[in-house]
Amino acid sequence: MGSVSHSEMRVLLRAEGLSFVSPDYENTEQKSFGFFGASLLPDAKKTDMIIVNLTGLYAAEQPALSYLNIRELYFNYQIDSSSKFFFGRKINDWSHLESEWNLGLFNPQFRWNSLAPEAQGLTGLFWQKKESLWSLSLFASPVYIPDQGPGYELKDGKFQNSNPFFSSPPQNVSFKNGVILPIDYELEKPETSEVVFQTLYGAQLQLGEKTGFFTSIAGIHKPANQLSLGYKVVGVVDRVRIDVVPKVYTETNLAVDVGYREEAGSVTLSALYSNPKAASYENGFNAPEFKESVSYGPQFILDIKPFKFQLAYLDIVGGDIKDLGPDASEDRKALSQRFLFRQAFQIQLSHSDVFFKSFKLDTSFQYRQSEKDEFKQIRYKQRLNLKGPWAFWVDFLLIETAEDTISNMGPYRNLDQVFLGVTYDI
Image (cartoon, rainbow, N blue to C red):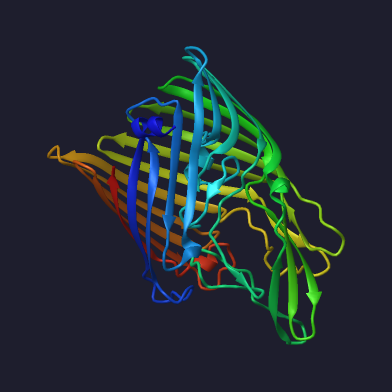
């Protein structure tokens, strides 16, 4: 493996800095953080038997921000000229809508930064057959890995302000008589075997050539990529203790893409249906009830090198989550979360070109707005690859939400952020 990885993988050393620039930022005491680590990436110029795509970063000043993101790690075997086996963790483009908006209904998500999630692969056995006019993919697995969210610290019943991306639950509870009591949380971590060993299976049929009309139909039955959070309230004289119990719950997802593509761009209309089944809890617990949802939206792409212009829209109908139980309240948000936002419009412009045969410059600007979830978001990224091993990049993300919004975007209103990074390819 050592000799194979040396010849077939790229190893990038990384140093990064993160700063929060909003004057209202109060999530943590410090506003700037430093990271160092490495990435293992596949070589785009080679067809490898083993594909590795992972990044590990360590934050010396705040370990809760450290992470290991294994996006893909799989072995592939060519059966014949049109068929392949893949075994391991692999990203599959099940739904164009999911890939564009990172919904996390098919592929699990790396949500270290909730405002900029990334897809991770499902883990199991994939079989794919590709012909000129159609392709068929089958997937099955006895192993399930949920979303990878931001790290957190729970000390003496309190969630610590150690990770700016972690949205902690309420720290106090208010009663009708005006009394306000602090909350102590107890998190009952499930056994690893109870979470990991689950059954997953799915299939995808794609019709169409590289240009012209195309369609894709996909379906999957699997555990949801987020865990169900049930809780039980235990009364104490001057405090309230809440015992939180995470559980796996299952879902069935169906996706359809229809569109037309040419070298200069494409038009796609997508729909995605999800039917979750709630986990069961003992009597006395407050448990979430998940409603089925339909997500839909078009996307338009105009690709005229070196520029690329994109328009996209997302709307999610249904998908409500309501806690049911002796202590649940209609005016209180459910402890569990499924969608970060439920409606948005997006416009994106990107540019990629090589200058003087010495450096490559990649630039992208994205604007995202939602009337239903009451937020606006701007993201600007630029990466400079020099001829040789060095690369430098900057990533701005600005977020604005309504002051009194009750949407899931509300807790992130002060997370205006700037990433700076440098990589060295060894």
